Length: 159
Image (tube, rainbow, N blue to C red; front, top):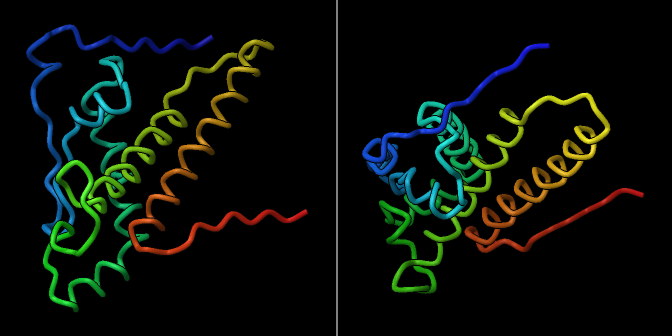
C-alpha cells in the first residue's frame, strides 16, 4: 500500500504571507490567501499545489471568457472593473462572479487531484460524496461565468 503524507504549513509567517498570481491586465490578479479564507482551504494544501491548481483554473476561466473579453476590449474597456455592472459591497459585481468562477474551479481541481485513495466501502461512499461536490463546484463556476457575461443559465439533461 502506498501512502502519501501531506504536511500542513506550520510556519505562521509562511501561512500568512500574501500570495498573488499576476494576471494579464484585463482580469484582476489572484490573491491566494483570499481564496484560502473564502473557500476555507487550510494549510494542508501546499503553496505549490495551490498555485498549480489556481493557474489551471485561471487558464480555464480565461479560455471560457476569451470572446467576451475581446468584445469588451473592442468596446474600449481595458479591465474587468471598467465594464459596467451592478455594484455589490462597493465593488463591480462582475469581479465577484469572476472570483467565484476561479475559486470554484480551483476547489474542484484540488478535490479531484488530491483526494485520498481508499478501497474500503467507507472510501467508496466518501469518493461518491466528493464526486457530487466536484460536480457542484463545476456547475457553480459555469453559472458564474454565464452570469458574468449576462447570459442565461442553462441546465440540460438527456433522459
